[in-house]
Image (cartoon, rainbow, N blue to C red; front, side):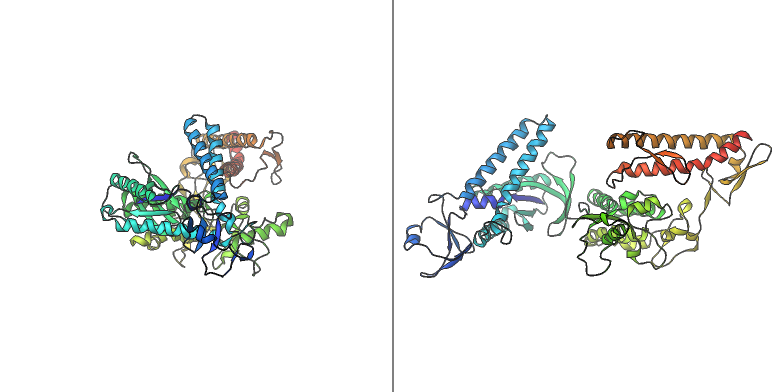
Length: 556
């Protein structure tokens, strides 16, 4: 499937057809009739003017007349031509300075700025509410001419039998052309030929440029598609590209984006549904067991506090209101994105009751992510929208998936980990015990004794095998503590450099134990190091519980 795009379509139309305030003669009308133009209620032309200009008039598809450049050059066309020419020069300079990354970024920003200014010129003519010089006649002329240009291109593609092409999608300034039975090399040749042919049938500077090939690809709806992109026939490894779907949308979790992208890559590369099923099974199992990172399951939605009819509003507004109840100064800006996660709150709990801020989960280790919600609503739903097209029922895969035991990740609050529809199992309400040394499953625990079989400690669960070797227990747990503390120090060093704080500034008091521990006063939810720091800190503090056992074993 070839993608062809009209280069700067609206600016090119203004230049090609000389559209402007300074060249408009108003709408076509009968002799003696007057018409409204811009802010003028009545716009009349001098007698005989149209007769003298009849060979120098462009008429737009919506019936508005403009003089040709031979009579008067459009002011908008002059401005846009200078902008586009300058952008071409900047892009040429970019090719000559590929080795200078700093200059390359600066030039790229300049050419994007020039492109933006050129593209918003149409918006300047159509901004009837807030614009300085709105003109519906000029704005409609630009839009209708663009639509007519696109339709002529589509008709030509369909009517040319030698191309054997089908236009499967067209939107504003681009067409997606499907070549059934053609190879990638043949599609590149035909795409270039189509682009050159349609460019010649339009006035300069309107140009239809062949951009890329998608193979394979999925078209979902308007402005929503995904596929493997080839920009030249020599490309060995295609690039995954998506527009408008969940992999590039900011209002979905990172887990959704990663799993959906990987699923699509499996589909495009292998078309093997068995491989896809096994991949999804592995991801769902990780979520059910809680072996995931919190930052991958944070949802961020825009909120507009004070505009909701109901008392609570959407989930993001609930979290924002909870923060405001503690501190009114934490009210989010209008349209600001508020992050939240969904946790398990017990059987029958409503979704609004399970919505909490990420900080709440980080500060309460007993809270667990609602695995059923994330799998069914956040992961399966977007995947199903794509795979239902080819007849694959993703939801049935999940419902028939063999369930795994939660092991060490179980507990009273993790009941949702074994949900199957509305059914729950009794084992989800109980946690299994594991030896802290070898991690093997054990019964309620074994008392630690020394070589003379004297009782040493009862607060740490150790299996019978490890309990017979106190020195092994000391070595293993000490190494584990040292490793956790070293990891925490390395992460803290990174955070201190980022924030510019000295180690002395990072000393905070631990109110529960009364001890001093280092930390960095940074709560950037978008920083992956933030979550690593919290996890490392919790691990280091949790391993301090080994101290009593180590002391007793050392002096026994």
